[in-house]
Image (cartoon, rainbow, N blue to C red; front, side, top):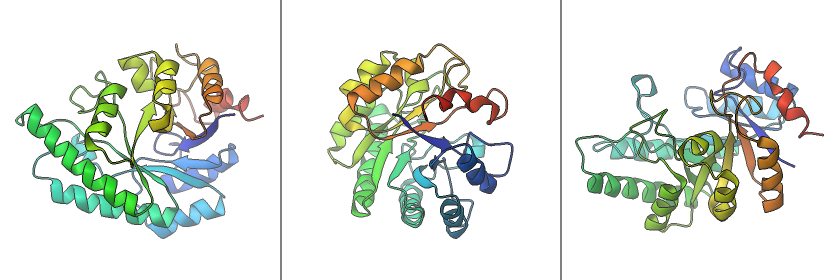
Length: 259
């Protein structure tokens, strides 16, 4: 039986962020995730989690100037100190919020830097983050993003992610497998997840095309969820999609998996 987490960066956008916890609970979620909690006081978020009996299962590292188009800074030269400060801040939040996983969006590549030097920079930054998080008993995740939505993003395929993990060699780096992104990049969804299951620590869902809720596009989620049960996947599945209408009206797809 799949365990669904509400991504509060994408769902319940009809209300302000701090009100979304209550709505997630009312709609049957027992867990939440989001990209960045850093604009809100830790104590305020902790209060919402506790009052609504929710578990936080994921957050991202700080990712630079999001409004200006940055999507992570792990591959950007001259930002190493900022990256390390972000790791420390993320650990502080994760400890306070009881979150055992932090995802690193690696970012868009700097075209002025060679591929070799970019790779070296990424490896150095992720090596640092992996060890700092390991010392805090928190998993580091990395996520491939499709080239159509983010043409310059450093990490584009699951195989590239696994090769990067192997190069770093720290056992505390795992794969965040976003089904929407990987459908667009490589297909072979269930076969890939089964092959990489030991390194997949979190899964996210959205349909394609449109990145809307499951059941609105071409991906057979009945088959995928059954396959994940068969494989023995026991992690959370994050609902990171754009509702076609209101969040609540689009949640009917999930009800049959909650009975």
